[in-house]
Amino acid sequence: MRKVISFILLLIVATGIAISLKEIPFGETESKLREYCLEHGIQETGATNIVTSVVVNYRGFDTLGEVTVLFLAAIGLSAVLYRDKEIERKKGRKSSLILFTGCRFLFPLILLFGAYIFIHGHLTPGGGFQGGAIIASGFLLTILGCWRWVGINRSRFKVTESLSGIAFVVIGLIGLLYGGYFLLNYLPKGTPNELFSAGIIPVIYIAIGFKVGSEIAGIIDDMVRSG
Amino acid sequence: MEFIENYLYYIASFGLILIGLYIMLIKKNLIKIIIGLSIIDTGVNILLITMGYLRNGTAPIFSKENLLPSRMVDPIPQALVLTAIVIGVAILALALALAIVLYRHYGTLNVSKIRGLKW
Image (cartoon, rainbow over all chains, first blue to last red; front, side, top):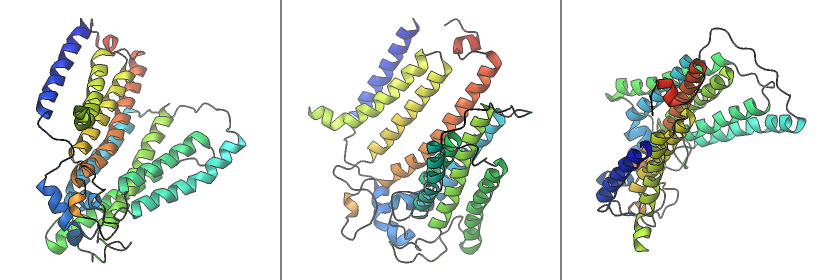
């Protein structure tokens, strides 16, 4: 009974989708917004990666909102998993020498790679969100492979996260004081395709990188601790 | 054949969305329902990217001199998906945390038992 009803429901949804999508051609996009962003993106923002200029400049306020959603999810997770007293960690087997050494060797390289990704966000495919995810994966590696080598300090994550979030808002507010718009691009744009270009975009992306990295690493840490 | 060429990406993305919906409707294990949620998330992201695709288009990055703006794919859906993926990870983690707490409280992950439903 349950399956039959579900199948009927899915069939209705599928036919509705098929009817509505029959008219939309694939592989041809005629959006005015796309043309505007592609043609004026470099002159207006200075970033050669147009996706970055859309994320941080044209839709910067929206990105602030998304970062807030991420923050709320992390806070909600640690509130849900909170326990009065820390449970004692079961003493697991110590990882083997190869795993321990390899993990210790890879961890700084992963952090460096993540930093490279978010510093070059305005020039190459990459940015704060991707770089932050890579940094968090480095912390996940230490938790899985060499927990005892780097005991992760919780409050440092929180401090990094808060400071980078505050940096994002303060950079936006300086634009409000300086030119009358929140998140105005007030720094010099420079020549495109150079590292020091695109005004506030790399600065904001660095803040986002730190924030996303420490937030996802904090989520992983909370889940491991509650385990 | 032409139909598949034209609509392959739509079929794939909506296939993923429908599979996820089916899982969420049928399955009773909470972990499986969360997996279905994650599959729907992936399908929606692929759909958004597909909407901005241009045949034989390049990535919207002016890394060389002779790249034409008219041959680039739409950057706006890509910017949306970029943030949506990270949000998806956070939502998934929150859902899993709630599942952990439910398991601690009820001792089971079966949705029917948790809610006291017959089916």
